[in-house]
Image: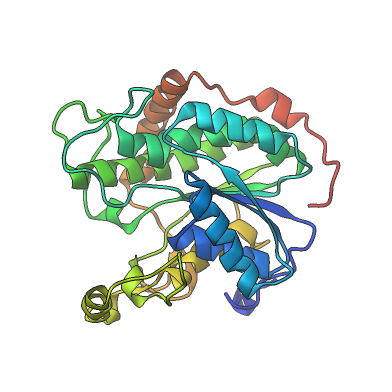
Amino acid sequence: MARDDWHPDRLPDLSGKRYLVTGSTAGLGFFSSLQLAGAGAHVIMTGRNPNKLATARVAVRRQVPDAEVTTLLLDTSNLGSVRAAAATVRGRAGLHGLLLNAGIVHPPRRRETTADGHEVVFATNALGHYALAGELLLPLAAGRGRKVWVGSMSTSMGAYDPVDPELEANYSPWRAYVQSKVATTALGFEADRRLRAANVPIASVVAHPGYAISGRTRGILGINEPSRMTRFVDNLQAPITQSKEHGAWALVRALVDPEVEGGQFWGPSRLVAGPPKLGTASKLTRDEDIAARLWAYCEHATGMTWPYLKASRARRPWRR
Protein backbone atom coordinates (compact mmCIF):
# COMPACT_ATOMS: atom_id res chain seq x y z
CA MET A 1 0.00 0.00 0.00
CA ALA A 2 1.56 3.29 -1.09
CA ARG A 3 1.91 5.97 1.52
CA ASP A 4 -0.36 8.34 -0.39
CA ASP A 5 -3.07 5.68 -0.38
CA TRP A 6 -3.05 5.23 3.38
CA HIS A 7 -6.31 6.05 5.11
CA PRO A 8 -6.95 5.36 8.83
CA ASP A 9 -10.49 4.17 8.13
CA ARG A 10 -9.42 1.81 5.32
CA LEU A 11 -6.75 -0.43 6.78
CA PRO A 12 -5.21 -3.34 4.86
CA ASP A 13 -6.86 -6.72 5.33
CA LEU A 14 -5.44 -8.16 8.55
CA SER A 15 -7.27 -11.49 8.43
CA GLY A 16 -5.13 -14.30 9.78
CA LYS A 17 -2.88 -11.99 11.78
CA ARG A 18 -2.67 -11.74 15.54
CA TYR A 19 -1.73 -8.63 17.55
CA LEU A 20 -1.30 -8.04 21.27
CA VAL A 21 -2.14 -4.60 22.67
CA THR A 22 -1.19 -3.63 26.22
CA GLY A 23 -3.53 -1.33 28.14
CA SER A 24 -6.61 -2.16 26.04
CA THR A 25 -9.40 -1.27 28.42
CA ALA A 26 -9.61 2.44 27.55
CA GLY A 27 -8.07 5.26 25.57
CA LEU A 28 -5.50 4.63 22.87
CA GLY A 29 -5.27 0.92 23.62
CA PHE A 30 -8.99 0.37 23.23
CA PHE A 31 -9.29 2.32 19.99
CA SER A 32 -6.19 0.65 18.56
CA SER A 33 -7.74 -2.73 19.36
CA LEU A 34 -11.02 -1.66 17.78
CA GLN A 35 -9.32 -0.51 14.58
CA LEU A 36 -7.27 -3.70 14.31
CA ALA A 37 -10.31 -5.91 14.92
CA GLY A 38 -12.29 -3.94 12.34
CA ALA A 39 -9.64 -4.82 9.75
CA GLY A 40 -9.99 -8.54 10.48
CA ALA A 41 -7.12 -9.08 12.91
CA HIS A 42 -7.26 -11.35 15.93
CA VAL A 43 -6.56 -8.99 18.84
CA ILE A 44 -5.33 -10.00 22.27
CA MET A 45 -6.58 -7.22 24.54
CA THR A 46 -4.69 -6.94 27.82
CA GLY A 47 -5.22 -5.07 31.04
CA ARG A 48 -4.96 -5.27 34.83
CA ASN A 49 -8.67 -5.45 35.66
CA PRO A 50 -10.70 -8.48 34.52
CA ASN A 51 -14.02 -6.63 34.70
CA LYS A 52 -12.72 -3.76 32.57
CA LEU A 53 -11.26 -6.24 30.10
CA ALA A 54 -14.62 -7.96 29.76
CA THR A 55 -16.34 -4.60 29.22
CA ALA A 56 -13.78 -3.58 26.59
CA ARG A 57 -14.18 -6.86 24.70
CA VAL A 58 -17.97 -6.46 24.66
CA ALA A 59 -17.58 -2.87 23.44
CA VAL A 60 -15.40 -4.02 20.52
CA ARG A 61 -17.79 -6.85 19.64
CA ARG A 62 -20.72 -4.44 19.76
CA GLN A 63 -19.13 -2.39 16.97
CA VAL A 64 -17.46 -5.28 15.13
CA PRO A 65 -19.80 -8.26 15.70
CA ASP A 66 -17.52 -10.81 14.06
CA ALA A 67 -14.35 -9.53 15.75
CA GLU A 68 -11.80 -12.11 16.88
CA VAL A 69 -10.92 -10.80 20.31
CA THR A 70 -9.45 -12.54 23.33
CA THR A 71 -8.48 -11.03 26.65
CA LEU A 72 -5.45 -11.55 28.86
CA LEU A 73 -4.60 -10.22 32.32
CA LEU A 74 -1.36 -8.25 32.18
CA ASP A 75 0.02 -5.59 34.49
CA THR A 76 3.18 -4.08 33.01
CA SER A 77 4.19 -2.70 36.41
CA ASN A 78 4.50 -6.26 37.75
CA LEU A 79 7.28 -8.39 36.29
CA GLY A 80 5.63 -11.60 37.48
CA SER A 81 2.47 -10.65 35.61
CA VAL A 82 4.52 -9.89 32.51
CA ARG A 83 6.19 -13.31 32.59
CA ALA A 84 2.91 -15.14 33.17
CA ALA A 85 1.11 -13.32 30.35
CA ALA A 86 4.02 -13.89 27.96
CA ALA A 87 4.02 -17.60 28.75
CA THR A 88 0.33 -17.75 27.86
CA VAL A 89 0.88 -15.94 24.57
CA ARG A 90 3.78 -18.21 23.66
CA GLY A 91 1.41 -21.17 24.04
CA ARG A 92 -0.93 -19.79 21.38
CA ALA A 93 -0.46 -19.90 17.62
CA GLY A 94 1.09 -16.90 15.94
CA LEU A 95 2.00 -13.34 16.85
CA HIS A 96 2.48 -10.68 14.20
CA GLY A 97 2.57 -7.48 16.18
CA LEU A 98 2.99 -6.08 19.66
CA LEU A 99 1.67 -2.64 20.61
CA LEU A 100 3.39 -1.51 23.82
CA ASN A 101 0.80 1.04 24.83
CA ALA A 102 -0.03 0.62 28.54
CA GLY A 103 1.13 3.44 30.73
CA ILE A 104 0.56 5.94 33.50
CA VAL A 105 -0.27 9.36 32.06
CA HIS A 106 -1.03 11.08 35.38
CA PRO A 107 1.78 10.09 37.80
CA PRO A 108 1.31 10.17 41.58
CA ARG A 109 2.28 13.37 43.37
CA ARG A 110 4.86 11.52 45.44
CA ARG A 111 7.19 8.76 44.35
CA GLU A 112 5.69 5.28 44.63
CA THR A 113 7.24 1.89 44.06
CA THR A 114 5.88 -1.39 42.70
CA ALA A 115 5.91 -4.81 44.37
CA ASP A 116 9.23 -5.39 42.58
CA GLY A 117 10.68 -2.24 44.14
CA HIS A 118 10.74 -0.06 41.00
CA GLU A 119 9.40 3.48 40.58
CA VAL A 120 5.85 2.92 39.38
CA VAL A 121 5.80 5.20 36.31
CA PHE A 122 9.10 3.93 34.90
CA ALA A 123 8.09 0.34 35.68
CA THR A 124 4.70 0.63 34.00
CA ASN A 125 5.64 2.69 30.96
CA ALA A 126 9.10 1.37 30.13
CA LEU A 127 10.54 -1.46 32.23
CA GLY A 128 7.57 -3.82 31.90
CA HIS A 129 7.44 -3.29 28.16
CA TYR A 130 11.14 -4.02 27.81
CA ALA A 131 10.56 -7.32 29.62
CA LEU A 132 7.42 -8.20 27.66
CA ALA A 133 9.05 -7.46 24.30
CA GLY A 134 11.95 -9.71 25.25
CA GLU A 135 9.71 -12.51 26.49
CA LEU A 136 7.78 -12.46 23.20
CA LEU A 137 10.80 -12.19 20.93
CA LEU A 138 10.58 -15.78 19.66
CA PRO A 139 6.90 -15.81 18.58
CA LEU A 140 7.34 -12.38 17.00
CA ALA A 141 10.42 -13.50 15.11
CA ALA A 142 8.63 -16.62 13.90
CA GLY A 143 5.85 -14.39 12.55
CA ARG A 144 8.34 -11.86 11.15
CA GLY A 145 6.42 -9.35 13.21
CA ARG A 146 6.71 -5.80 14.45
CA LYS A 147 6.70 -4.10 17.82
CA VAL A 148 5.58 -0.53 18.37
CA TRP A 149 6.64 1.46 21.42
CA VAL A 150 4.38 4.39 22.34
CA GLY A 151 6.31 7.62 22.81
CA SER A 152 5.13 11.13 23.52
CA MET A 153 5.60 14.62 22.13
CA SER A 154 6.50 15.60 25.71
CA THR A 155 10.01 14.29 25.05
CA SER A 156 10.58 17.42 22.97
CA MET A 157 9.35 19.63 25.82
CA GLY A 158 11.68 18.49 28.59
CA ALA A 159 15.31 17.46 28.14
CA TYR A 160 15.38 14.91 30.96
CA ASP A 161 18.32 12.57 30.50
CA PRO A 162 17.30 9.53 32.59
CA VAL A 163 20.59 9.16 34.44
CA ASP A 164 18.43 8.17 37.41
CA PRO A 165 15.64 6.17 35.71
CA GLU A 166 13.98 5.25 39.01
CA LEU A 167 14.04 8.89 40.21
CA GLU A 168 15.32 8.04 43.66
CA ALA A 169 16.20 11.74 43.89
CA ASN A 170 14.40 14.80 42.51
CA TYR A 171 11.09 13.08 41.81
CA SER A 172 8.26 15.11 40.30
CA PRO A 173 5.16 13.84 38.46
CA TRP A 174 6.07 15.66 35.23
CA ARG A 175 9.66 14.48 35.26
CA ALA A 176 8.55 10.90 35.99
CA TYR A 177 6.26 10.92 32.97
CA VAL A 178 8.65 12.59 30.52
CA GLN A 179 11.63 10.47 31.63
CA SER A 180 9.60 7.30 31.20
CA LYS A 181 8.71 8.33 27.65
CA VAL A 182 12.30 9.28 26.85
CA ALA A 183 13.23 5.79 28.03
CA THR A 184 10.44 4.11 26.05
CA THR A 185 11.40 5.89 22.84
CA ALA A 186 15.14 5.32 23.27
CA LEU A 187 14.53 1.64 24.01
CA GLY A 188 12.41 1.33 20.87
CA PHE A 189 15.22 2.67 18.69
CA GLU A 190 17.86 0.64 20.51
CA ALA A 191 15.78 -2.50 20.05
CA ASP A 192 15.74 -1.96 16.30
CA ARG A 193 19.51 -1.50 16.17
CA ARG A 194 20.10 -4.68 18.17
CA LEU A 195 17.56 -6.74 16.23
CA ARG A 196 19.14 -5.70 12.94
CA ALA A 197 22.64 -6.50 14.20
CA ALA A 198 21.49 -9.97 15.25
CA ASN A 199 19.57 -10.57 11.98
CA VAL A 200 16.30 -11.04 13.86
CA PRO A 201 13.31 -10.56 11.49
CA ILE A 202 11.45 -8.09 13.72
CA ALA A 203 11.01 -4.36 13.16
CA SER A 204 10.94 -2.05 16.17
CA VAL A 205 9.11 1.25 15.62
CA VAL A 206 8.11 4.20 17.82
CA ALA A 207 4.85 6.12 17.46
CA HIS A 208 3.13 8.86 19.43
CA PRO A 209 -0.55 9.95 19.51
CA GLY A 210 -0.13 13.72 19.63
CA TYR A 211 -2.35 15.50 22.15
CA ALA A 212 -5.25 13.05 22.39
CA ILE A 213 -7.79 13.68 25.17
CA SER A 214 -10.96 12.04 26.46
CA GLY A 215 -13.19 15.13 26.22
CA ARG A 216 -12.84 15.12 22.43
CA THR A 217 -13.42 11.38 22.18
CA ARG A 218 -16.81 9.84 21.50
CA GLY A 219 -18.57 8.36 24.47
CA ILE A 220 -18.60 4.59 24.87
CA LEU A 221 -20.20 3.03 27.93
CA GLY A 222 -17.53 1.71 30.28
CA ILE A 223 -14.71 2.93 28.02
CA ASN A 224 -14.89 6.70 27.67
CA GLU A 225 -17.39 8.61 29.80
CA PRO A 226 -16.06 12.14 30.37
CA SER A 227 -18.09 14.55 32.49
CA ARG A 228 -19.81 17.57 30.97
CA MET A 229 -17.15 19.79 32.47
CA THR A 230 -14.39 17.69 30.92
CA ARG A 231 -16.15 17.91 27.55
CA PHE A 232 -16.43 21.68 27.88
CA VAL A 233 -12.82 22.26 28.94
CA ASP A 234 -11.37 19.83 26.39
CA ASN A 235 -13.37 21.30 23.52
CA LEU A 236 -11.89 24.72 24.31
CA GLN A 237 -8.58 23.15 23.24
CA ALA A 238 -9.95 21.86 19.94
CA PRO A 239 -7.33 23.57 17.72
CA ILE A 240 -4.44 21.77 19.45
CA THR A 241 -6.00 18.43 20.39
CA GLN A 242 -7.69 15.39 18.91
CA SER A 243 -9.69 12.41 20.07
CA LYS A 244 -8.04 9.28 21.41
CA GLU A 245 -9.60 7.46 18.47
CA HIS A 246 -7.63 9.66 16.09
CA GLY A 247 -4.58 9.46 18.34
CA ALA A 248 -4.60 5.70 17.80
CA TRP A 249 -4.18 6.19 14.03
CA ALA A 250 -0.42 6.72 14.25
CA LEU A 251 0.01 3.72 16.54
CA VAL A 252 -1.96 1.43 14.26
CA ARG A 253 -0.24 2.64 11.11
CA ALA A 254 3.17 2.06 12.68
CA LEU A 255 2.01 -1.47 13.53
CA VAL A 256 0.42 -2.59 10.24
CA ASP A 257 1.47 -0.41 7.28
CA PRO A 258 3.68 -2.69 5.15
CA GLU A 259 5.83 0.29 4.13
CA VAL A 260 6.78 1.24 7.69
CA GLU A 261 10.39 0.36 8.52
CA GLY A 262 12.17 -0.43 11.75
CA GLY A 263 13.72 2.53 13.53
CA GLN A 264 11.10 4.99 12.29
CA PHE A 265 9.11 7.48 14.35
CA TRP A 266 5.44 8.11 13.51
CA GLY A 267 3.00 10.69 14.80
CA PRO A 268 0.25 13.13 13.79
CA SER A 269 0.99 15.34 10.79
CA ARG A 270 0.54 18.52 12.85
CA LEU A 271 2.46 17.13 15.86
CA VAL A 272 -0.57 17.48 18.15
CA ALA A 273 -3.22 16.20 15.73
CA GLY A 274 -3.87 15.01 12.21
CA PRO A 275 -3.36 11.88 10.08
CA PRO A 276 -0.21 9.85 10.83
CA LYS A 277 3.04 10.95 9.27
CA LEU A 278 6.70 9.93 9.43
CA GLY A 279 8.54 12.28 11.77
CA THR A 280 11.77 12.83 13.68
CA ALA A 281 12.09 12.02 17.38
CA SER A 282 13.76 14.39 19.83
CA LYS A 283 17.56 14.44 19.86
CA LEU A 284 17.73 13.04 23.38
CA THR A 285 15.78 9.91 22.46
CA ARG A 286 18.06 9.29 19.47
CA ASP A 287 21.27 9.39 21.52
CA GLU A 288 22.79 5.91 21.23
CA ASP A 289 24.87 6.24 24.39
CA ILE A 290 21.80 7.07 26.46
CA ALA A 291 19.91 4.19 24.86
CA ALA A 292 22.70 1.70 25.56
CA ARG A 293 22.84 2.83 29.18
CA LEU A 294 19.06 2.41 29.56
CA TRP A 295 19.19 -1.00 27.91
CA ALA A 296 21.86 -2.19 30.33
CA TYR A 297 19.80 -0.90 33.24
CA CYS A 298 16.66 -2.70 32.06
CA GLU A 299 18.59 -5.94 31.63
CA HIS A 300 19.82 -5.68 35.20
CA ALA A 301 16.50 -4.54 36.71
CA THR A 302 14.42 -7.25 35.03
CA GLY A 303 16.97 -10.04 34.88
CA MET A 304 15.87 -10.42 31.28
CA THR A 305 18.32 -10.73 28.38
CA TRP A 306 16.65 -10.84 24.99
CA PRO A 307 17.21 -14.21 23.22
CA TYR A 308 18.62 -12.78 19.99
CA LEU A 309 20.36 -15.96 18.84
CA LYS A 310 17.26 -18.15 19.18
CA ALA A 311 15.10 -15.47 17.55
CA SER A 312 17.43 -15.15 14.58
CA ARG A 313 16.96 -18.86 13.93
CA ALA A 314 13.16 -18.77 14.26
CA ARG A 315 11.11 -20.12 11.38
CA ARG A 316 7.75 -18.87 10.29
CA PRO A 317 5.15 -21.63 10.63
CA TRP A 318 2.16 -19.39 9.93
CA ARG A 319 1.03 -16.65 7.58
CA ARG A 320 2.44 -13.21 8.26
